[in-house]
Image (cartoon, rainbow, N blue to C red; front, side, top):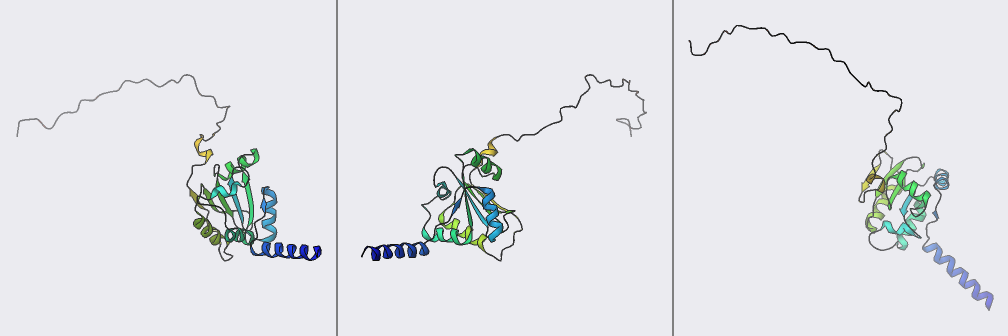
Length: 191
């Protein structure tokens, strides 16, 4: 009796898992790149904060089963947690601030899409379907900025050479302008 109930419970949990798979969330960028190269799926990088922060990319609600299935079937999923030092650094490199989405090409070497901010569930599904298309070729990165990234608030760091010496005094040649009197051919009042 117990064996039969255990078998039913296992069968039910396996069939439920097959109906609604959840994406495997990687948290190491190098591992995700290797996986992209191995299986040829684009990488979906969700940037957020805290546990399950990938959901903060959505403005309206949580990931539903259809969205989870799309991510699991068509993408290598990476979560970048901006609460960690490594996560903040990677988010700054991607220039998305504290939340956003980056989608790579199928080789994992170029960005196809970059979002700084949040989007609706409908927009997310449309974007994921667009970049999951196997016939799509990457020509340029589509960039969407809804929230200014944290790195944009800081001034750009520019380094100047330190060994440049500027002259302390400059000698300009002195000259006296020479004026020449030119006769006037026109006089006022005479015709």
